[in-house]
Each structure stands twice: as C-alpha cells, then as structure tokens.
Amino acid sequence: MNDKKYAQLIIKEALAIQKRENAIIWIKANTENLPFARELARMAYEEGAVEVKVTINDEELSRLNMEFMSEERLEHFGKYNLDEAMDYIEDGVSYISITGGNPDLFKGIDSKRITLRQKASGAVMKPSQKYTMNDINSWTVIGYPTKAWAKIVFPKLSEEEAFEKLKEAIFKTVRLDHEDPVKAWEEHLDTLNKRGEVMNDMNLTSLRYKSDKGTDLTIGLPEGHIWVGAESKDAKGYRFLPNLPTEEIFSAPDARKVDGIVYATKPLNLSGNLVEDFWIKFEGGRAVEVGAAKNEELLRDLIARDENACRLGEVALVSVNSPINSSGLIFYNTLFDENASCHLALGAAYPTCVKGGESMSEEELASLGINDSQIHVDFMIGDESLSIVGIDKDGSEHQIFKDGDFVF
Ligand code: ZN
Ligand code: ZN
Image (cartoon, rainbow, N blue to C red):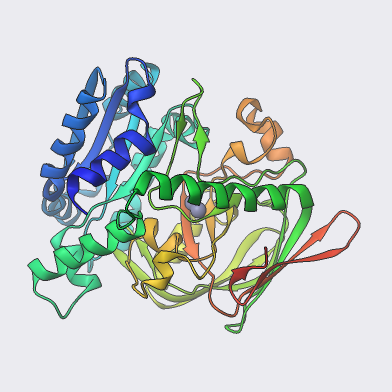
C-alpha cells in the first residue's frame, strides 16, 4: 500500500482519466497534502489530462481569517470565485476534492461568524452547485490524512505515528490492501448495484426506521425515485465514482413526508466543530425540534440556513459490516463516517435520484418532493440495532434491514 497505488486508484478507477478526451482536472487540496496532490497531478497528465489545476487551502490561514476578518468582509464572498468555477465547468472540468482537514479547526470560534461566511459563499456559489449535484461534471471526493486530523483519531499516538496509522486505515477502507484493488472495486460495485436493483424492483412508497436508541422515523419516497449505487455517469457519458470509499446505496426522500424522531449514532463535524449525541424530530418533513449534548447551537443554525435546510435530501443504506465500520474507528470526517453507517442528509437532494430528474425544472422537482437548499449535510443514524421496513404501494411490508445489515 503506497501513495502511488492510491493515486492510481483515483486517477484510473474513480475518474478513469485514461478513457477521457481532453480531460481537465481540478484538485482541491490542503497544504499538508501537497506532495500527494503533485502525485495525482503527475499521474493525471501521464494518463492524458490536458490541464490539471490545483487549489491549495491552508488551514492555519483559514482559522486566522475566521478569527480576525471583519463581519462585513466575512459576508463578502467574491463573485470571481463563481466566475472561475463556471469557466472551468463549461470546459468540462472533473473535480478531485481531498478531504481530511482538522475536524476541530474552528473550535472556540463563534458559530455565527462561521455561519455568516458559509451563507455568503453558499449564496455566491449556488449556480455552480448543480453541475456536481446533477452529475453534469465528474467529481470525486477522497481522503488523505493530515497530522491534526490523525491526532484526533489516534489521540494516544505521536503525530507521526498517528499520521501513518490513519493513512493505513484510509488505504484499507479503499481496499488498497487487496492484491488487485481495481478488481476488488469492480466486485464491490457489483454488490452495491445488485442491492440497488432489489430496492428499485420493490418500488417502495416509504421506509420505517426503528432502533434501540429510540429512532422511530417514517420517510416517504417520491414517485419514480431511483436507488443509486457508487457509480455515476456525467453528461458526456463518462463513468465516475463520486466517493472513495463508498459503501452506500442512496435515494431522495419525499421532503414533505418525514415524520418521527431520529437519533444520530456518530458525531457530526460541522465546519470544524463536533455536534455530539444529537437527535432531530420531524413533522410533515420539517425538522421541528433538535437536541444535542454538544454544539446544539450549530445544529440549530444549520437547519435555519435557508427555507429547506430543515428538510431531508438523502436517504442512504449502509451495512454495519462495511470495512469502515469494522475498523471500529470514528474518523470524525463525513466521507468516512457516512460510509460506515446508514445516514440521512439535511438539505439538497440529488435530482439524479428520480427518473428524468436531471432535466426537470425546479418546480417539477419540488412537486415530487425533491428538496433544494444551499446545504447538503450527511448525518449518521445506523447501528447494530437498526431495523428498516419498506412499505409498497399495496401497503405490504418488506424487511430491508435487520440488526443493522441488509437482509438481502
Ligand atoms: Zn450518502
Ligand atoms: Zn450525502
């Protein structure tokens, strides 16, 4: 297991750049990941990319901005950011986003300042959001360790040891420990596709969740919804894997038909702060009450971000027996934790989760209950006690999950 093999998996399997014509790649990385970003860039060029653009974010500088910038400037997010993104999007750019920053980056900073900034950037960048949400352009989110992140996952180890240990854990989640990782991925994708087919054939109208923690939630599913696996196709017909690792099949809920209470089973990292032990109560699709042992305020701000931030936009099924969950680690990073557990997302739904959704107008999507919002935030609700029952058009019940795992 080494960086080169990992880069190969991303470039040749997740984006399959060797099969693309005139590929333009935009890598979003962290200062600490610079050597790995270079490895990716080199390989992308070797596989035929015509341009690789890299944006480097420095967390210490981001923290300074969040601490010291005037409120007025926090609220001002330059429109050039959108212009630049649209310029590349129109040229068919494919994104590689490397996650793995310090989960505690903004610890102690007034959540109002963070929200102010996110609202400003969300509003400016909104027109570019649909190109990834609708899979018009290819995109993939992958993880790479940073020392600060590694120290949080392995607090007892030295920085260097923690870093190496986290890297090893990440490599295992993406099956780099298999002799032939690409083959392992193709087999895994097959399993996910089959599960998606079973769900699609049942054509359910709702799902009922129950768990020992107290979750008792019913989620309506829209007419024509589709369960999607790990693979996506962009507007040019190129296959890509939006997430590495990925263990989920997911669909869009009917954002008007969610009722009951759901308990989170893992902490949620919201812009550098952890919301812990929380629950959300829904009525008629809206989150009407929330509670959390830590950082409840942030959760409240999140669901008030815009009109539909309080509604659900994703329902995802993940076995508790996934390699990520089996590792026993909490990664404090959504990409990894969401693939360890059944999850839901507050905010925007993927229009690709209903038949013909890519070409529907906003009104058509809304009429099916497909949610739209500035935010899309996953939170984890699966554990060993989770049961999910699906209800079809005739009112017949089908067991989907028992003891945290698929029954098929
Ligand atoms: Zn998901
Ligand atoms: Zn999601």
